[in-house]
Length: 124
Image 1 (cartoon, one colour):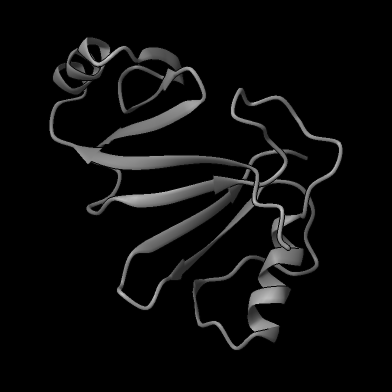
Image 2: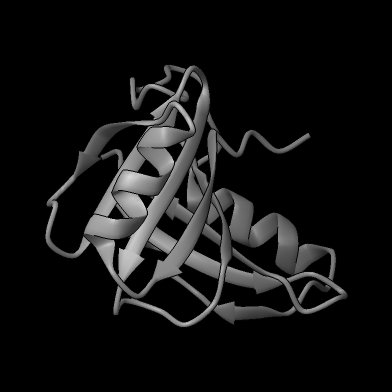
């Protein structure tokens, strides 16, 4: 089993302030982000990323090394390990990371229906 870390849905939005206000009405609070280009909103353990002019489609996002509160986990699969496991299973990657690198990196894969999955490691 792969340890993918925190999960969120990353949404492209047209107006960050309006989207923030809408999700606040649903009980979300700002958890992280720069407030100008993106926000991470949280409701209990549920995370939603709001991204203005950063990408065009909804992404399923996983953050290896983080729990749902962005606390670093002591036991997780590095994104490069996940990349290798997917390649070993003949899963086509849309974007690779440097397999010899360390620390933050990301990969992108699409599921059989074309949904984009971002595996985005921030921990060092």
